[in-house]
Image (cartoon, rainbow, N blue to C red; front, side):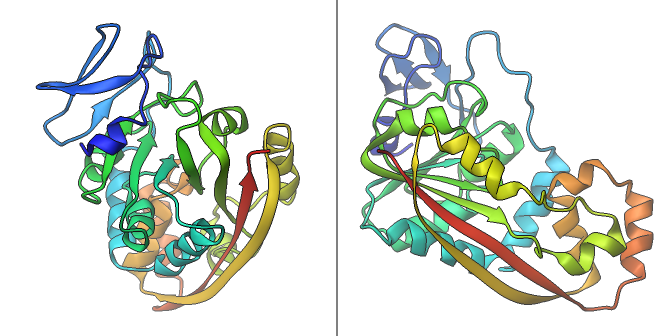
Length: 277
């Protein structure tokens, strides 16, 4: 656990600063949190959380798809936006999953540290090993985050829910949020044939409504590319996202078998930057 990353965290019980002890983390109020043998720490609020996050199978699919480099362009576009206003020293990836996108950002900023927050313990196990300057925390990202006020230069949200109030709280003066969201034509070649969830046509409006009371828009970029995916890659792509909760394995396999092999797939995302007023 990088000491500079630990200093970004706050106790989920009392809000006090956290520090390391032989077993994991302990706050100045005496609350202790063990470090798991896989390397992550669980900082859930008192009473736990109703959210379990992605399953082990979903996380395994995500790890495999990202490790193959299929979303390397998305990670690069994210890093470009993170670095556009300057070089951050502290980065928080909310709903960051396996930590692959945060690792790509940290590779571009040699003196920065990062923290992944995710509700899934399976994701946190992988994120803990994603980068030597990152640490992973199991947390309820819908509730108050176990992060100190004004501690972050950048907050990242890639294909995950946004929490405008908490983002504004943890950002330092001049800090920025970078959000990656799917555009209307993202994965368009797969949505109909496989019966996937489509992008909400009012996505931009909902994003602005959720963030607008707390943050100000500071720019938008687009990333577009075409991938050539074999059937196995299509299966992991579907399995790693919310589509996996709506399709049975047999139905998905039958529909994928009817696709060309390989199949051309459009990756289309919007990269929005928001700043703390």
